[in-house]
Length: 542
View 1 (spheres, one colour):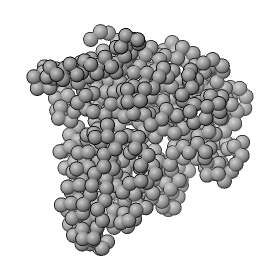
View 2: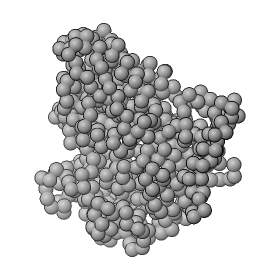
View 3: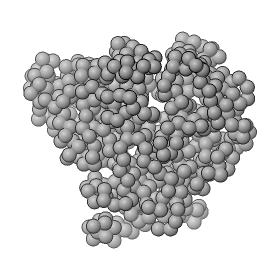
View 4: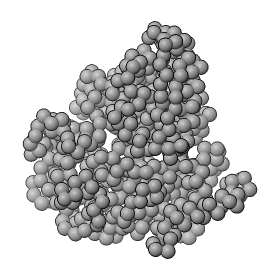
């Protein structure tokens, strides 16, 4: 039976009136502005729309509409295709990339986009003053790491140069199989130098804001919506499908789904933002679109805090986690429990196994660490972006389940702390937590996008764990052109991560699902769950 037919159970009159009121408020139905062509629920309030600073998926989904890089992702395959660069050549040794910009590139406010803008944007991301968590993704460029670390002060020594107005030359430290994928990531997007130098940290508040992508920022109202409007000066504007798009930062599954059912919302990006209790019914509906993608959910451990600085404590925690129980009882959407980090199906790679559920061994190891039966183990806290902080409830449900597992198996006590999305990002980035939820959606189809996260110099390593041997294995693997040797080196590194050191406890591989009405076109299933906004449109009336 379809959900819309179950009005007595799901939609009381009061709830219906509430939904209509909210619809008028957030869908652009107010008299002073037109309704958007497409309205999307995007899970969380963006932390930033600066390509160099963002780290979360909610932000990235918006930014790919505002700014573009040398390459962009194909909406069907999620593979890199030409963006602001119409073509490129690679030297025989794989170390030098020469990009040729399109000659019709202009900012949304007018004025040409040139090779100098590309150089400025990349150097800005690497500048230590920018403090980009993603800067490590550009370390494959010659001298980029030393510049980002402040060891080199002269930006001209970094291997990014403008040869002329339309040509950019990038020199790498060595062959990098996924370098074009990096060029399609938001951190490599081209941003407006004059605006940034004029307004500094407040440059995103400039109106009009110069952008290089298919959409302009009409406005961003906190806790309301981000409104985007078509950029008529974008090089591919004739193929931008929708004129106005509203993106709503909404983490409540019940509210999101109610609005979706009433037609006030066209798309719900995340499966976590639909009611879990309805999944069995939703999976049979034509507007519920499940897919497999490269994403892993884990528990992050701050190894800089006692007693979590002891690997034995971390192992005991991992061995006490029943992953099957979590996916069957809580997620219930086809997720696959795993003890390793890199998702199954990643190109040219198979992960080694980590630590499986073994409560007897968990108790033994915790006793060896000095906490028999949990005696003397300090009370600690688990942080997550949860429903009480405007996030999704599934993180809270998993936290409660872990709390019970560790209490019953190990005799230790854990408190739960639900915070807003921005607070969660900030707290984990600054290691202001004990244990918390973590996850990652691959930036490209390669094991490196997961494994490089836990190198000591990576800004997205939110565990405080550093291991020089691990770093060397990843670096050595990335220098390999022999895929089998590369896989073996990566497997050694991942084994350290999930069997020996355990700064994280992998739980499951995501099973993705998007909710969108059947009159919406331009969304395709791909392994990165990446959906460029300029391809999305309404095809007919409901």
